Amino acid sequence: MTAPTSETATAPRTNSTRWDVVGATVGAVLIGIAFLVPRLMDEKWRKKMNAEAAPIFGKWNVHMGWGTVPAILVAIAVVLYGPALARRIRWRSLLVVTWLTGLAWSFALVMVDGWQRGFVHVFQDPNEYLHEVGGVTDIPATLRGFSDRILDFQPDSWTTHVSGHPPGALLIFVWLDRIGLRGPTWAGIVCVLVGLTAALAVLIAVRALASEDLARSAAPFLAMAPAAIWIAVSADAIFAAITAWAVALLAIAATRTTRAPVVAALGAGVLFGFGIYVNYGLVLMGIPAVAVLVAARTVRPLFPALVGALIVAAAFTASGFWWLDGYHLVVQRYYQGIASERPYNYWVWANLAAATCATGLAVPAALHRPISLGGLRTRNGLTYLVTAAGLAMIAADLSALSKAETERIWLPFTIWLISATALLPERHKRAWLAVQATGALVLVHLILTNW
Image (cartoon, rainbow, N blue to C red):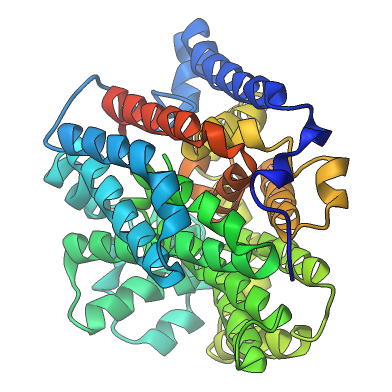
């Protein structure tokens, strides 16, 4: 399957680069208004937000740290050498370099806040998964009684994050504990190392459905995404990686760019299935899954993928956890907490501002290229992936079950939106990478994020 290169894909149909600047400006204005509105409201309204630095979940704190200089150096290196290196090196080397660059970038951003505050403290929070790990002595019994502990104000109610997710999320950290990777430090390390592989899955999917040129063009942006602030460290980074690899495996199965397409499709189904058992909202990843099949113009992988997903669902159901019961109870739990106070008329659009902070302004600059009639007419697989991720994000937003914290919660969607940067003109790549780096550095030095 062939597709236009990054340069030809941006051709004059989109009215040159003027609309890139317009898109970035709209994104910047949206972010600015989202930060400004809470400052204009009264104290009572701001307290209901439960997000001091809204739309970002964190606290205002101008600071520097050990990671400041390394982060700046990584940013300079990627801006100066990233695009050329991505075009030149071998494909497998590109994947390794992308992951290592992402690791250096993420760790440097974490160290702006310091090792304890930026890395270890996150999973020491009593609302996090590790708080419950020690109490899970019998996994089958935990699954059978999981739904009974979802609602709040009970003696044995799950902590906030455990109750807000299906049991698969807790099991990830229980399994880490069982193999000896105990405590907040190991939890953080695994989140970063696994979460950063999501970028590689995106590159593989774009290569399979569009072209290697486009995948290479997206690589520097994926390696140095502002989303790294929340990939290091939050469990949502692992969730993003699970579903990203599901999409990637489905893509290579659909395009038959693997020697074992049936095995790849089965693996995709298992990961899609497990995805909805770590995060209820990841049922929306069905939209990108459909986009993959549409882009590849085939339904051949559908049956083995469904078999894989049903195996996971059957395993959880047989163990005593019924997904629909958990979902309905978690909606009730959601409105037992601060979500009942957070104003939807603010978050319904401020969520998008928070997500834009995670993607960087290069993404709204690029979005008009794939998400347009002209972009869709090209039948470029990248346009389908980006459009599908955007639709999934909008559906999550309109559900009213995502009010705040979408900079991390929507990582499974925003990681695909970042791939739209592949369609930016090659001659402007360095400038847009500089915009990305600047945005991330400003955020991490002005706000102490909760993740």
